[in-house]
Amino acid sequence: MNKSQLVSEIAENVNLTKIDVKKVVDALFDCIEKNLNAGERIMVSGFGVFSVSNSPERVGRNPRTGESVRIAPRRSVKFRSSMEIK
Image 1 (tube, rainbow, N blue to C red):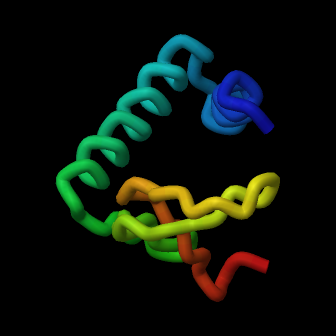
Image 2 (cartoon, one colour):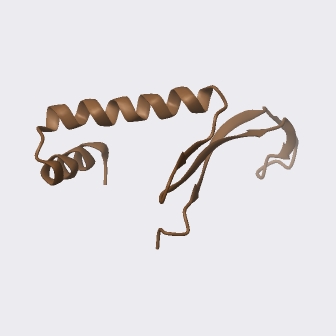
Image 3 (tube, rainbow, N blue to C red):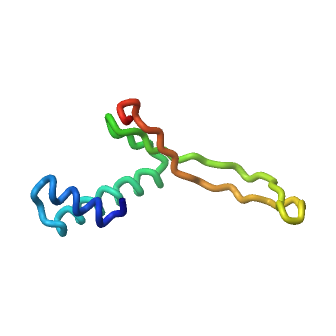
């Protein structure tokens, strides 16, 4: 399911226009992004938890040549689903 399909399905379920639902979905994603960038966890009861994980710099190997390669530190988003999701 992509974003436009999500918007269409929500619009059908709540009897709103797709334009109004798209504004709400965009605002939701913007809010999630802003709070994750600030380092906060987002807990959605009955759905799951979004959090940010920091990976430190490390040394990896190029599988083709076998030489050592520096892998830069990075941040990534983690999602842990609720036990209620089956």
